[in-house]
Length: 304
Image (cartoon, rainbow, N blue to C red):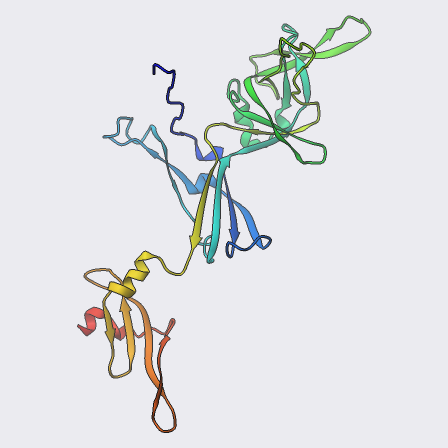
């Protein structure tokens, strides 16, 4: 405290609708070209935890913050391989209608967006004050994003254009005024928009009319999870080492049982047999996996 060091990290209480889930899949870690990238619906797979009676908040009403359940659909994560899950703030893609100024405050510059050009699912985010803190990134005409360049929204309100006479009476420039009535136009102020005091002519770039932009929230930091789907984990390896086993002397069926007590289930079965030559000398001892050809008469509780 004496050094001015305060905690600046807070648990995220973001809603699933504000999150995008991107999944990158490759068969192994050496694959550099053969991979699949897809997007999953966050609102059905990401579930926030809520306060309980003993955690201090309103029971089942207030989001606990920072703690979420992420479901992995079996139809997506069925294949063996490496899955990289990328959770990032949702991207709102639209374009700038105008780079205007306020009629009453000519020094205030900002971007004007038309809600008709915003995907319907995200239009509610453009209500007054709702975009404060959002980040705006810019795309070039080629579609490539301008690297490491962004602006932060400081305010947003509904607006409407008004005609304002300039010094030359023959020229008219569009300016904007705020309105309390809901319109399809939103005026956003950004930072930085003013020139530094040591170079008044260096006006910061905030975009240009018609330019495509990406608007994202800053509610949480992007998160990357690395998941590897394999045939065996610690539990299945423990079955082979410590689980119950049986060997049928009559037919040579070797059975492994899971760790479910007191009713172990058949986990896997093998055929045990020998390979001998024409002189009946033993050549090999074979253990062959029976696959789905399970003999359920070898159930542990039944044979014991």
